Length: 217
Ligand code: AMP
Image (cartoon, helix red, strand yellow):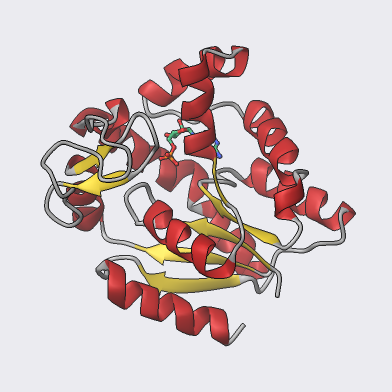
């Protein structure tokens, strides 16, 4: 069965962690615009060069760059049976572009899942997050520790703290979320496409809540 969803919620809500699990369970791609942009930066592409300063300072990359990147990704073969969009859309303009794109493809969104999360939890998760610069796996020093401290379980690379996971940039990203992304909750609410889950929950109880939401769609 196909499944086309977007995940909404502040940075640190657990969207990436849960998107990876759902992606495997439903055999549909997890499309994270943050991961796509970081990979462009690592490869040194023109898009990566333009995006880097926005990302490092916690601001949003301009809509037209992100919309083009996502439209291309959504035309790949592996998106036939659906997708989990993580970190996109992040502005009303992006949501409108996505809506128009999916309408033309006659593949409307099933729903938007909002991870309702408190600021205290988000700050704790982001400041304790460690990421693998090689394969993109994420850890948390307390909640999801790697088997060997500082080393990626998947590929053995040394873990790093993302440049945008420092206290000042975290504050900026949360401010940007409230201002530019939170209006999407109303955008999808008025279209009767919004489902809300409790993003403060630990991984397993939240997976159980997600499984229930996905069953009753
Ligand atoms: P994330 O990994 O989702 O936290 O994204 C990291 C950073 O990438 C964000 O703080 C933005 O600078 C940029 N980014 C990711 N997705 C988008 C998007 N949909 N629109 C604009 N900027 C984005």
